[in-house]
Length: 134
Figure (cartoon, rainbow, N blue to C red):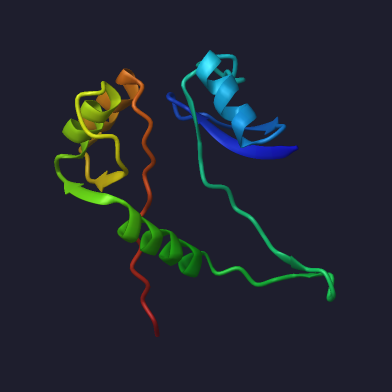
């Protein structure tokens, strides 16, 4: 069993347990996962906080969110096409089968994010954090 943190299209976050990630995808596609607050069935996975534990010391390892986010950004830079301000346009084309299926990254305006949610286009916002070292 695996627990996923989920968010509905209305912004409510909640946790659900699944047999595996395929089980989540199947249940999501059939619309049976619903928000416990508003019963919305348009849900997506979100990043969750986590800790690592070393078995030999039985202590929680130090977790640096900046380093983790940096690794996520590096992965995205290598594996996603940057479409800049055309993100909404390209995401809609891909969603409706009019554009080439691929991983894209870019920027949206708040109104465009609302449109993507209304159209059921899955997307994930990842913050860009600049670290100030003293």
